[in-house]
Length: 312
Image 1 (cartoon, rainbow, N blue to C red):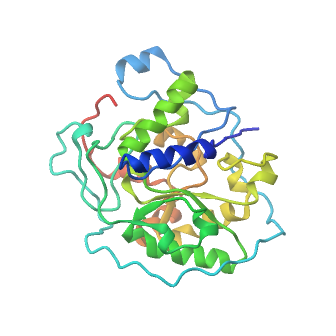
Image 2: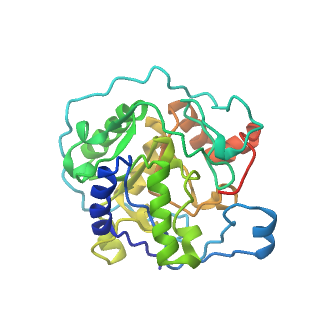
Image 3: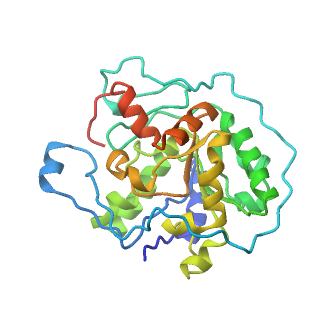
């Protein structure tokens, strides 16, 4: 059984410290299962100066379980609706110069910026139009955390949460935007705590889609009972929850796509994360859903490299 623990109490104190230091986007980093192991071949590490490709074991099957019978009660949402972002675009987001190092890449405000363990972002990149979700979603969804998201993704997110609650579901938002600095601090924690597994527990700063400000990590109140651990927040068995199944079937209708599907590990380089959804616009999300592929697979097949890989 795979299991991901999430030291939220530690991060609550940590976020207060980070806020005092004006570090934006502090949120805890999801840790993969303890049954997942890294295969860090020396030859790969030598020829590719970036996080090694990892191999997952013991992940759940792709088949979804039967519909759960017990459903939570819906919660009313605030009436506030964020204005649309005039600079948002669903077209690819090339850099002005593709012949620069990825560590210097500052993408535009489009929605399809490529971020992988190969193609990262500059430490100076911060997305435009970040807003706090607490102004648009109730406490039982945001859990009181200062989660931020780009304005362009907030209206579709609120609509999706509203429909989920109307269906009797109880989605929770565990993470949104994470700045380069917040990601670096989270990764350092794992380097100190579990150095042999840091590369699979946390992406290096600059190599996380969370820095784009269009990614949401969802949670479910059913997960604790399914996993058998009271304080669990991230687990690959999220796909078994009512919220996980609904998102898999419907998120594309609101412009969100699952970034790291189970079957796309060899392409994305990231472990299966059934809770990690990225806003890419309805047209692109629908296309990916109909083709049954990940955004990364689509981009690597249709677009030139966005930058020159360098060591994170």
